[in-house]
Length: 220
Image (cartoon, rainbow, N blue to C red; front, side, top):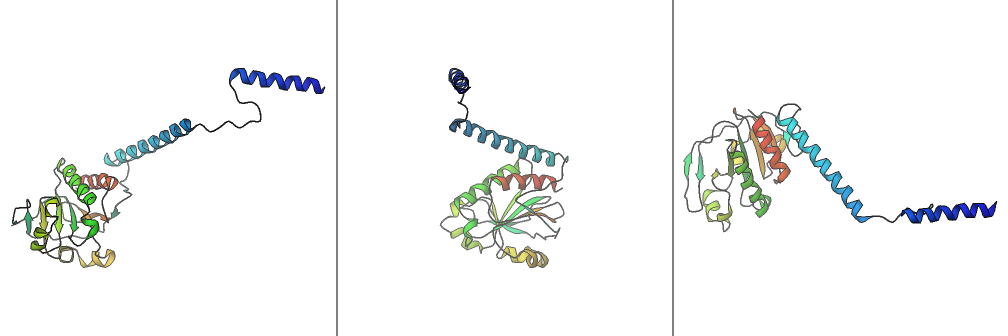
């Protein structure tokens, strides 16, 4: 009986070796390439699901539920005429604020997260993407005008920018300040009636830009 079992076991090992299979009882070594492909497939599936979800929200097939924005309480802002600076060598002039829905971002030269190269890059990209849909970006500095214009980094600012000293204190409703504070950078999505529909507390990023653009388009 023992010799028969040994024979059958040997035959199984021989057949496995000829077929390239793993001998019974052995654990195959991990395949790094297979693991990499599985990880890539999982990432692609997640990205596709995210895109499908955003498309559904954009078309109204699903409720808009952003991950990087918080819902506003519909506080209304009054935007007076503001100083607008078109270029580093432009002294600026007072102009009426843009009408209709818009994205408003408060920043200041003393705010480190507001003025990093990456934040300015994201802000420039946001302005460009919103412009494709006719939605203005109102980039509003809370510094004195002379401070903004004379800053050594002035050439890197996103132009045009608007200016009102202590803008966040002057324009934000008291109820909004009591609920959320006055941290910068602060980005708001306003509808055509100047009601705050969505809020971004903190720096921007690619995912934030995607949601801000979509939020602006939905905030009629």
